[in-house]
Amino acid sequence: VQLQASGGGLVQAGGSLRLSCAASGRIFSSYIVGWFRQAPGNEREVVSAIRWSGLNTAYADSVKGRFTISRDNARNSVYLQMNSLKPEDTAVYYCAILSGSYPWGWWSNARAYDYWGQGTQVTVSS
Image (cartoon, rainbow, N blue to C red):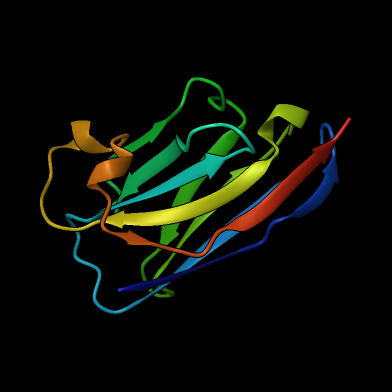
């Protein structure tokens, strides 16, 4: 499986961006696709995740109510709609896949994810 993240850019605080994660290869319904971010000097943190079946979604507390994750099976893609962006959302955003049939509670465990995209920069100016 290969992942290609895109959609990052420079936006003013309060603005919106939509990130895309295109996957090549077979994605099974049990797989979990996650979005993570890493700001300079910080550890990588989970932002959101969705099971490929669409039955489960989750968000970090810092983005709840502002970000929405979705997937398009036909396009083999996952999206992260980011609204009401804040300067503290500035980071490189990565999409990743946790393959296999893991319980949903693993969604935030970055070390468990085994396929990663290259990252896309999101910069939010104040």
